[in-house]
Length: 350
Image 1: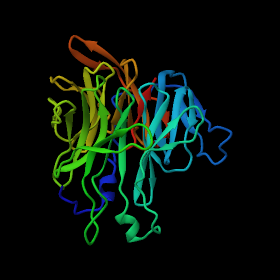
Image 2 (image 1 turned 90 degrees about the vertical axis):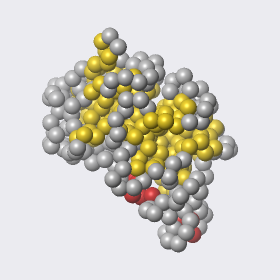
Image 3 (image 1 turned 180 degrees about the vertical axis):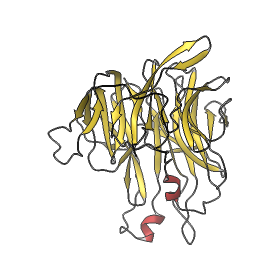
Image 4 (image 1 turned 30 degrees about the vertical axis):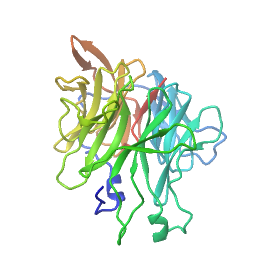
């Protein structure tokens, strides 16, 4: 694999949406409900303001200030508090989450059960060398965008094939790996490309394929969404998905793929049948990304910047089938002043 000629931190630049873009309708009017941190966490971040009167099914995960929050009914619960947790994703049974724990020059995959037990480390990507040293950098690798397989036994994620090498040290491209969802397992490389870096990852619900974004390694390239067939080992562009698309999310029945797509300086949520077909626009906000289907497939959540705001808030829309097509209702803004981490996205579980 050809090594990168730029540091991995360039890959971490997140889409900055234009705060002046107008949504297609004003947010639903509602009272305000403070989401308070658990009393056992006096060092938790300030309360987040959430729109009340909007009871959503299941449980949603999002990241704010490097901490993972779970929102259920009309209450927020802080799950981590060290400011270094990102990219959370539910297990299929809803009993645990996988997330990324960042440290200097590396990040690891962790799982967390909701029974109160301590987080479990799945990878050991760091180094015992002194912090801020070149030796530490040369022994460390990154892990990003974990996603549980539908059977809950394995996790797919993005990482480098090897630590940095050369002088000055440069990183390998982010490739697609899988590993057991238990500690002590070995990772397995299943896809790599010199043309780009593996981004957000999701699984087809039947377990037949892994769908992921491939971000261009060189300036001027376009992101795309690929489907890795687990039976053949082939990775091909998903039919109907336009260039400059990313943040894929599969519907629970496997019929639809939602994604974010750029159009000039605007970004919105679209969907396409997973077997190929016409692209359907689901939002017209101009700042939307990171879609996630509800567990019953009747709603879609995403992050977007409201007019006059400077950070991402949580939005939802109802979905309905019309013939062979998919239609979304006018999006409703769920949070106010959330400033969620857009790259970590939203995970919607049971």
